[in-house]
Image (cartoon, rainbow, N blue to C red):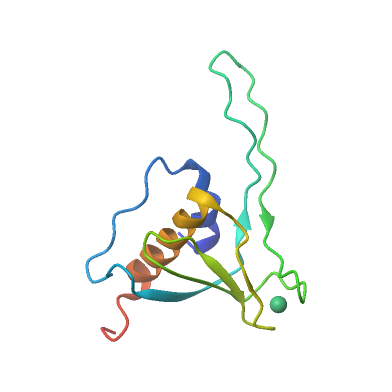
Length: 122
Ligand SMILES: [Zn+2]
Protein backbone atom coordinates (compact mmCIF):
# COMPACT_ATOMS: atom_id res chain seq x y z
CA UNK A 1 0.00 0.00 0.00
CA UNK A 2 1.47 3.34 -0.95
CA UNK A 3 0.48 6.57 0.68
CA UNK A 4 -2.00 7.52 -2.02
CA UNK A 5 -3.95 4.37 -1.23
CA UNK A 6 -3.79 5.24 2.43
CA UNK A 7 -5.08 8.76 1.90
CA UNK A 8 -7.92 7.45 -0.20
CA UNK A 9 -9.07 5.36 2.73
CA UNK A 10 -9.22 8.24 5.20
CA UNK A 11 -12.98 8.49 5.10
CA UNK A 12 -13.53 4.76 5.14
CA UNK A 13 -11.61 4.09 8.34
CA UNK A 14 -14.03 3.28 11.15
CA UNK A 15 -11.38 3.89 13.79
CA UNK A 16 -7.87 5.28 13.88
CA UNK A 17 -5.04 2.80 13.39
CA UNK A 18 -3.39 1.75 16.66
CA UNK A 19 -0.40 3.79 17.75
CA UNK A 20 2.74 1.87 16.75
CA UNK A 21 5.16 0.83 19.49
CA UNK A 22 7.85 3.46 19.88
CA UNK A 23 5.64 6.37 18.79
CA UNK A 24 5.08 8.64 21.78
CA UNK A 25 2.38 11.20 22.44
CA UNK A 26 3.51 14.74 21.78
CA UNK A 27 6.40 13.62 19.58
CA UNK A 28 6.15 15.64 16.38
CA UNK A 29 6.67 13.72 13.15
CA UNK A 30 7.41 15.04 9.71
CA UNK A 31 6.63 12.39 7.12
CA UNK A 32 7.43 12.80 3.40
CA UNK A 33 4.36 11.50 1.59
CA UNK A 34 4.71 12.69 -2.01
CA UNK A 35 1.25 13.33 -3.40
CA UNK A 36 -1.88 13.38 -1.27
CA UNK A 37 -5.15 12.38 -2.87
CA UNK A 38 -8.23 13.58 -1.07
CA UNK A 39 -11.66 12.17 -1.70
CA UNK A 40 -14.57 14.59 -1.64
CA UNK A 41 -17.06 12.26 -0.08
CA UNK A 42 -20.64 13.37 0.11
CA UNK A 43 -23.13 12.40 2.77
CA UNK A 44 -23.40 8.72 3.68
CA UNK A 45 -25.72 6.67 1.50
CA UNK A 46 -29.15 6.09 2.97
CA UNK A 47 -29.63 2.38 3.67
CA UNK A 48 -32.51 2.12 1.17
CA UNK A 49 -30.46 3.41 -1.76
CA UNK A 50 -29.95 0.48 -4.09
CA UNK A 51 -27.85 2.30 -6.65
CA UNK A 52 -25.22 4.24 -4.67
CA UNK A 53 -23.82 7.39 -6.22
CA UNK A 54 -20.30 6.82 -7.49
CA UNK A 55 -17.69 8.64 -5.44
CA UNK A 56 -16.03 11.64 -6.98
CA UNK A 57 -12.53 10.61 -8.06
CA UNK A 58 -9.97 11.66 -5.46
CA UNK A 59 -8.28 14.98 -6.24
CA UNK A 60 -4.59 15.61 -5.67
CA UNK A 61 -3.93 18.14 -2.95
CA UNK A 62 -2.35 21.26 -4.50
CA UNK A 63 -0.12 23.75 -2.69
CA UNK A 64 -2.02 27.07 -2.60
CA UNK A 65 1.24 29.02 -2.94
CA UNK A 66 3.15 27.30 -5.77
CA UNK A 67 0.52 24.94 -7.24
CA UNK A 68 2.58 21.80 -7.04
CA UNK A 69 0.85 18.57 -6.08
CA UNK A 70 4.06 16.72 -5.20
CA UNK A 71 6.63 16.49 -2.44
CA UNK A 72 4.27 17.09 0.44
CA UNK A 73 5.12 16.48 4.07
CA UNK A 74 2.59 15.63 6.76
CA UNK A 75 3.57 17.12 10.13
CA UNK A 76 2.02 16.46 13.51
CA UNK A 77 2.11 14.44 16.71
CA UNK A 78 0.05 11.27 17.13
CA UNK A 79 -3.65 12.07 17.63
CA UNK A 80 -3.24 15.73 16.70
CA UNK A 81 -4.48 17.38 13.47
CA UNK A 82 -2.10 17.20 10.52
CA UNK A 83 -0.36 20.14 8.96
CA UNK A 84 0.80 19.70 5.38
CA UNK A 85 4.02 21.37 4.25
CA UNK A 86 5.10 21.84 0.65
CA UNK A 87 8.73 20.82 0.18
CA UNK A 88 9.15 23.11 -2.84
CA UNK A 89 8.12 26.48 -1.38
CA UNK A 90 7.84 25.71 2.34
CA UNK A 91 4.21 26.76 2.65
CA UNK A 92 2.40 24.97 5.49
CA UNK A 93 -1.34 24.73 5.90
CA UNK A 94 -4.16 22.52 7.16
CA UNK A 95 -6.02 21.14 4.14
CA UNK A 96 -8.44 19.05 6.18
CA UNK A 97 -9.97 19.64 9.58
CA UNK A 98 -11.50 17.76 12.47
CA UNK A 99 -11.35 13.98 12.59
CA UNK A 100 -9.96 13.68 9.06
CA UNK A 101 -6.98 15.84 10.04
CA UNK A 102 -6.21 13.60 13.02
CA UNK A 103 -6.60 10.48 10.87
CA UNK A 104 -4.22 11.98 8.32
CA UNK A 105 -1.52 12.31 11.00
CA UNK A 106 -2.23 8.81 12.30
CA UNK A 107 -2.05 7.30 8.83
CA UNK A 108 1.12 9.13 7.84
CA UNK A 109 2.95 8.09 11.02
CA UNK A 110 1.72 4.49 11.06
CA UNK A 111 2.51 4.06 7.35
CA UNK A 112 6.00 5.53 7.82
CA UNK A 113 6.74 3.26 10.80
CA UNK A 114 5.41 0.17 9.02
CA UNK A 115 7.36 0.80 5.83
CA UNK A 116 10.55 2.37 7.15
CA UNK A 117 10.70 1.59 10.85
CA UNK A 118 11.33 4.05 13.63
CA UNK A 119 13.88 6.83 13.06
CA UNK A 120 17.30 5.71 14.18
CA UNK A 121 16.41 2.00 14.00
CA UNK A 122 17.35 1.49 10.38
ZN1 LIG B 1 4.37 25.09 -2.49
